[in-house]
Amino acid sequence: MISIIIPLYNKSQSIEKTIFSVLSQSYKDFELLIVDDGSTDNSASVVNGIIDKRIRLIEKENGGVSSARNTGVHAAKYDWISFLDADDLWHIDFLKNIVEVIEEQKEVQIITTDYETRTSNGDIIKSYVAHKKGYVDFFAVTNEIGFHILNMSTFCVRKSTLIQIDLFSTSISHGEDMEVFEKLARNHKIYLIDKILSYYIQDAENRASYKIPNPNKTRVYQVDTEGILSEHEKKYQKDRILVYMHDYFVQGRMNCLVMLYSQHSGFINFVDIASYVYERLKLKVLKN
Image (cartoon, rainbow, N blue to C red; front, side, top):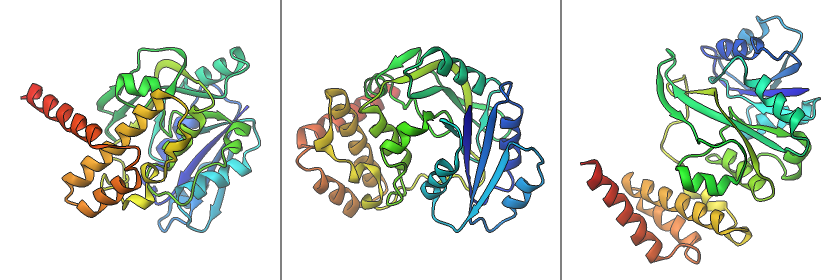
């Protein structure tokens, strides 16, 4: 019924625990594709040491996480695909809940769940609960609640629907997942399961650092603002661009800030910037 794809790169300390969170699922009808993207540690050996006929290890030269995910999609034999990062975990009933939606909602294309960030010791850092259930507009809900309802360890999608948007871009090194979510959300509502069923391990080994790359390698730089289809997405994209501009400013990378603004100067104006700064200052005052 479901192909699960885990992209793997130098996660020898965490991959075993992630695999067993899949193998221990209450729903058992799946294949687990682990795509080793040229790891230089013993990650592949750890995978090979786990014996289960549902596991397939695919080894390839290093090409980045998008390349690894795309390889997994092309190799998947089932119509539905769930993604899981190599240091994250699932609740034992994650797949059970996903399959119930697939069976009950015949037209559904994309499914997600509420989630938590946790430490590697299992301590809860923050719960991301949308307080919504069923079909939702990704952009409208994100604007309303202030966080994304999709991440790569809650994301389940019909394979044919994902292929229609040309999979994950290998030209982006920051926000490649968001590009996929946004493209899908322009044409489909997201079905949200109102249960915390996925755990993002925030302090896992080799977790991507917060420092963002130069603008031309980010989704917010490459986004086609002329392709925006709704006012909800317009606000969503403006907010994301402004957040990146703020982060570049905080990091003292003024050349990157200017580069990003120049790319979207016809979309972002000084009123948007002034409004964003005002809201940031207001929040800071309220916190103090």
